[in-house]
Image 1 (cartoon, rainbow, N blue to C red):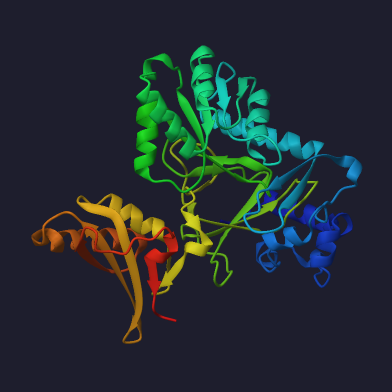
Image 2 (cartoon, helix red, strand yellow):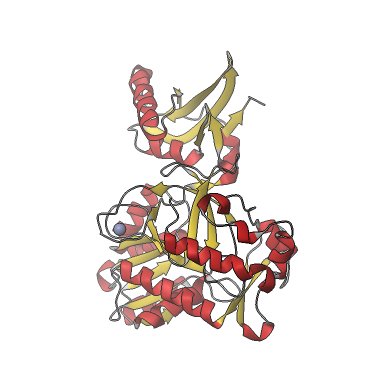
Length: 411
Ligand code: ZN
């Protein structure tokens, strides 16, 4: 995505004082003359900021304001080892709420809505972010927090909640309970704001049907404010992102070079206005792409695709980046193919060769047609020619670990 003049000015402003304000960047940029960063190309030479950097700065080494300016901290749930602590100033909290309010507006939520918030409150950024946005919008927040499904359903009926904020898995659970208890006619939900995580179209369909809602994917991460830095709209697909607060790049996670628009890679974010913990070229490890062109909804904000995985899942075959979710999607759209598959990557005659084995209940006489459809669909989707091989049900090894589906014999 081309950096616009306003964004460049904001970046230059940020860089002009970063070493003075942030002990973290003073050290990180010790050998860098930030006054030489004058355009997009020179900006792209700056080193990335990694989650490990933030961990090493635990607890408050990332703080870039005097402590008297900090009004709150949040912490990202470290799946491994030391967590990350992010300090927020008053303005950071206000900016986050303003972005969140914009998300709700984009989803067509207004001050007459009653918003049931089920993500957690506390160190994690989720619940309180949803709530601050609701309050700024002027709607009614129903701050439930997670769990206690019976109480959730009771409040949903008694208070006539119109919007559900939730993870996809909890929305599905609530939807199943609503169906089981025959409550669909007793609830008033019209929209769901669902935290963007990798989830299939089947799951989405079930949530929509069971709760009778329109779904919006919301994106965010604790290191960059929290949820609310982007959301899908009613038209088209992907999520609009707030590029007046943040600068977004998509890089190849292997070469670390910025990718042309439309190609899938890792999302990298720079904060323009964040005071407590400004971050420059922060690697999210989330895989997505810029969706080229304007959205039919008319918004001026560019879009990224729904997050399709993490960089750890990615494979490079014949010079093309791809990841398991793309195979899963093709299989899900192929009549008769089950969700069980295995990918084998080999080096044959100096070239990469990828074989996708998939299970099917169909008779062997139909294998060839299915294989042909899958190869064609994948070529269209990812622009890479693969080999597809149908196998009977229960043929492929079962494993709890997703990564075991990919067998890479090249290295
Ligand atoms: Zn749109």
